[in-house]
Image 1: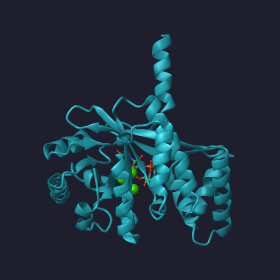
Image 2 (image 1 turned 30 degrees about the vertical axis):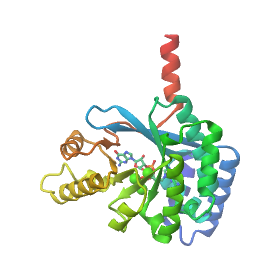
Image 3 (image 1 turned 90 degrees about the horizontal axis):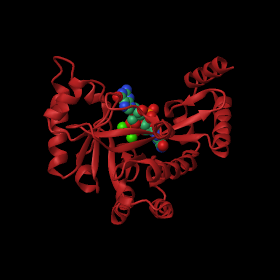
Length: 278
Ligand code: C2E
Ligand code: CA
Ligand code: CA
Ligand code: CA
């Protein structure tokens, strides 16, 4: 059944435009999944590069599908966004992630979470987020909203105002996937950004011999960010050579399979209770 199910999703992916029936089926399943609480945040560590200390986590959405197993955003995010269901799914994710951070996160570690463009159009997004963080009792300064350049395109003024109001209460903002979008450099100084994430496309070119372009781009991003007092996280670090190159260029933080995979937080609990009982 699992194999059949997977095939169905593959077919669905390839015929997304004309596969109306499958889109509806998937929407129905997403609604059910919300109802049955099948979405779960995984945490991937964000590390200081000089000593690999975990300084934060990115919360990444996973769907525990009853037949298909663990699904990643690539399998369902587009349908969730197009149908508008992403809003409800994200709110559930924020709530669960904040709870996990406050209960099990390393002391002082921050958590970043992905905010889809839809939320940023809502005038009460920030107020709702602040209420939720207060109810959970989490220090707002430990939270960082990741936004993409795509979200800014629609309505840069509204996004800027929302991020300003979040900053007033201590919630930070990070510009995600930097360098892949429309990369208007004016965003960098006009937005209240605490962090910027260099996209993995640049990072993964760094250890290829003969490729000096990525090195130039990454060095330029670092120089610009630092001049504007914005911290930098390099994404998708998979090799030591990539990490070393980034460190040599003065990049302070990184994320990637070399440093740690996204994990369900309950596996940290298991290892703790194993230690306690053993
Ligand atoms: P993203 O925000 O750019 O997240 C980074 C993606 O890179 C994650 O994929 C992560 O698992 C993956 N990754 C981490 N380290 C490495 C590495 O060393 N190599 C490679 N090749 N990949 C690495 P994931 O978890 O599949 O998420 C995909 C995208 O889905 C995210 O891209 C983000 O745009 C979106 N997303 C994830 N969680 C949420 C969520 O809760 N809400 C919304 N709206 N979007 C989300
Ligand atoms: Ca992200
Ligand atoms: Ca990213
Ligand atoms: Ca992305």
